[in-house]
Image (cartoon, rainbow, N blue to C red):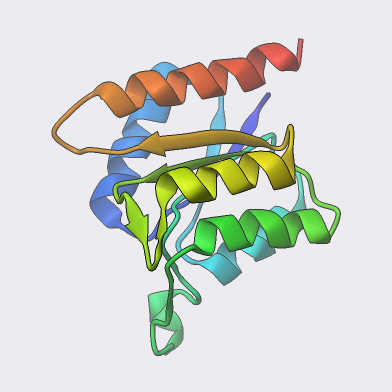
Length: 149
């Protein structure tokens, strides 16, 4: 595994994740996308072994003059859309929320596991004041890394 796509619009969370990846996986390249559409475009170009995606995403990059429409389950939609296109990238959702509209993270996580099979690795609950998310993320990333050997 060599290349990771991180799709995250929150600057502080994105910086925490990038810093963690640089420290824990210095030999892996991380590419960034800030919205649903930017994530789809980058994923379609190919070359990614792993995708880390926020659940709640803006549809477009904020600097594109958009109305900043937010997709509450954007991460789920993005993973499913890519699968519909025949693009299979191991995926991990990283979120700081428990609820997305009328649904819980647990419900969406279960649905992604059922629908996406081996492509979807699981969900990580991010919290900027705790390190537990790093251990969960390490578990999933290591699983992807060692499955490539």
